[in-house]
Length: 293
Image (cartoon, rainbow, N blue to C red; front, side):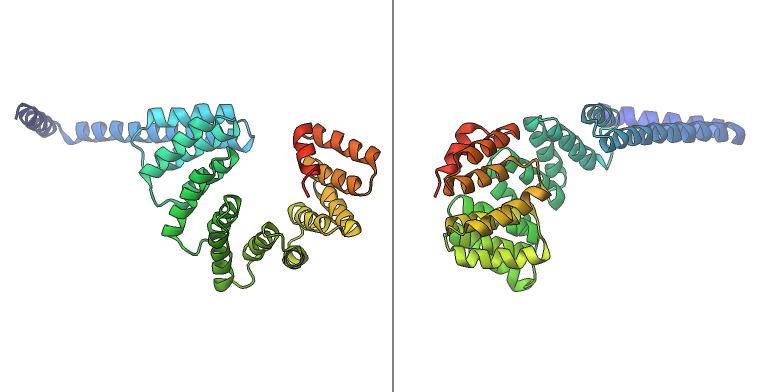
C-alpha cells in the first residue's frame, strides 16, 4: 500500500509539473529526453559494431569484452538472446567451454525454440565429446522441426557411435524418404553400412556421394573401406586425393601409414606416423589405428 501511494504521489507530481510548464519548456524537456534516448541507442550500436568488428577479425577476447559490456549496460534489451549466443560462440573459440555452454543454455532458456542456438550447443557438446548431451539437443530440435536434415543426420551418426544401429537407420531412411537426393541421407547410410562392416554397400554409397560432393572426409572413409577389403591401390588413390584437399589433416597420414604397413614398407610407414604426430596425433593413437583391422 505504501509503495502504491508513493507511485501515485510521483505521478501526481509529474502531472502538476507538466501543467505548470509552458509549451516552450515542454518542448525543451521532450527534446532533452529524445536526445538522451538517441545517445543511448548510439552507444548501443557503437558497442554492437565494435563486437562485430572483432568477431570478423577473429579477435575473440576483444569481442568478448564488448559483448559483455552490451549485456551489462543494456540488461533488458530484447536482442540479448542473440548477444548471449554470440558471447558463447567467442568463448567457445577461446576454449572456454564451460562458460560457453552456460551462456548457450542461458540464451536457450530465453528462446527455447531457437533451433540455431540448440545446434550451436549440440556442436559444442560434440567438441568436448559429450555425446549424450548432444543427442538430447538434436532430439529437442527434431521435436521442433522433425524434417531438419542436418540435425537428423547428426542424431543418426551419434546413434551409430553409441551402438543404436536401428535408431541410426531410421534417421537416414527418414531423410531419404522426404529427400531421395539428400547427400546427408546417403552419407549417413554409407556410414551405417561401414559400421556394420558391409564394405561393398558402404563403398557403393560413398562413391555416389563423392561424384556429387567430393571431400577429404568422404575419400578417407571410402579409403578405410578399401583397406578393409585389401584393395590397396584403390585405397592409395583415395588417400592421395584426400591429402591433396587437406594436406594438414594428420589422420590422413595415419591411413597412409596403414597402407604402407599392409605393403610391408616400414620406412614409409614411420615417415607418415611422424607426419601424423606433426599434425597433432599421438604415437599411441597412431598405433591403435594401425593395429585395427
